[in-house]
Length: 96
Image (cartoon, rainbow, N blue to C red; front, side, top):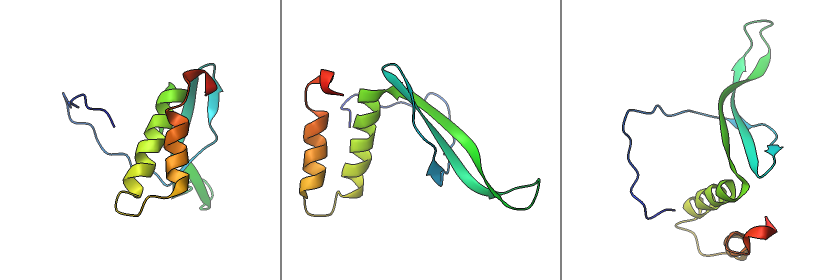
């Protein structure tokens, strides 16, 4: 997590998601498509409706993933998997 202050110059709505599609790699960047499972208005079945697409550098997206992981395990004892993931992120930039 960054030590730089976070500001919200205008209200940004929360986006609820139930899943993510396959990552799309675009050079040094990637796109993560997020969706919500919903009932289809076409045939009454279920479908994944895209609600957001996040684009960022591979490095930044890995740091975001690490922050999510650390937040989810904030109150649990440290485990080797989390430590290994953080160690990977702090490794040489050319590695990922």
